[in-house]
Length: 246
Image (cartoon, rainbow, N blue to C red; front, side):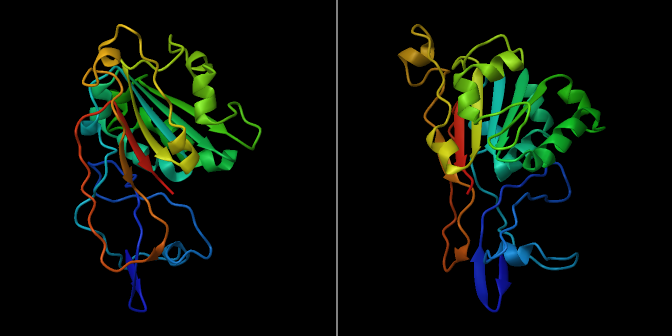
């Protein structure tokens, strides 16, 4: 939050830096005429910003049930919270495989995620935890690129499973866990896991399969704010956590 001319502007951002880092990192687009980002993009070292003392949201590992495979589904700047989780050693201690699916319109918009993912195995702090567990699957919807199409399209067609050699052809509620952060279309068409008829999750809503999504809004349109209520989400463990990033 930043104060200009006695006007308070509040905007939610996901923290992209890992929990162990001494600095906070944020990843955002620049909106030329945006009430906040038009100013925020020009801040310099030494400028002041105001942060709430307590971060909130549901894109945390403790909000998920145990599983074998963790999926991160992101569009655009929605990769920010996963940039944090991909650098968390606990992510790789809890899951055998971590798949980062990131979809943007243009290939240039994938660059932040690509550079981050490629640097992680050699990272002196967490490289040993990652090994070959992290898999990256970037896609575009406009530019010519190795992988084309929306996240849901690549999931329903089975292409991502075969391309990554996962040995499965669909999401399995017994082993797969997922987090979503992205555009409204991604939110409205979030991947649906296939339930096997005899699986515990198919028989009981309290089984180990995909539970009802926990939803929160991790970003809001820029607008002047008066009194804003702090959002306190429920962190009951689920197989699926979901947040909107506008």
